[in-house]
Length: 183
Image (cartoon, rainbow, N blue to C red; front, side, top):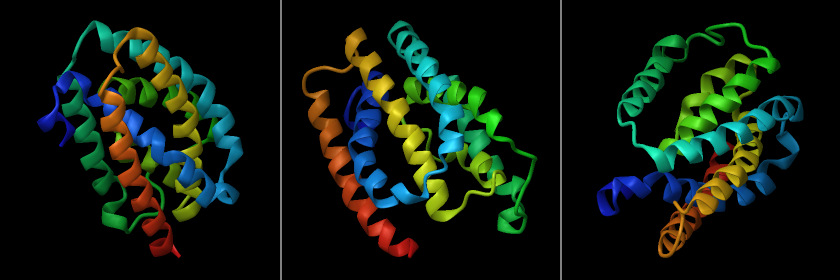
């Protein structure tokens, strides 16, 4: 939707800003469920991915990566055999180091990567509140680096802040409603 109304070149900064605004509410709602062991592996590499992704973002646009992202997300349905399989591959906390870098790098280029990490969290045994909480903590800390990169490199300026704010406020309301539904 953002790409339809705004230039495709500003989708990633606006969507990431909107996501960043909704994350504090999610952190508050799910704080007690965060798996800090995963966060300590993920975040340092995610910060590096955000910085490199921000630099690459202002240098070029690579539309073909969106196709690869879409194929991976669709494949998760098959990996878990439409919900009938608990795990599709063995997962360790240390695997979140390269995942943090790659996923944040891609997210910095394209904006929302949505459920790309879900198969990895599920294979670690994180479900419902634990998955949402841990994913939010990782995303919040990586998002700080993403927004800093965009702002420093001049990709996030002017009215783009207002668009991101509108997205974030709407998503915050959705998080509050979603928390009630999870219970």
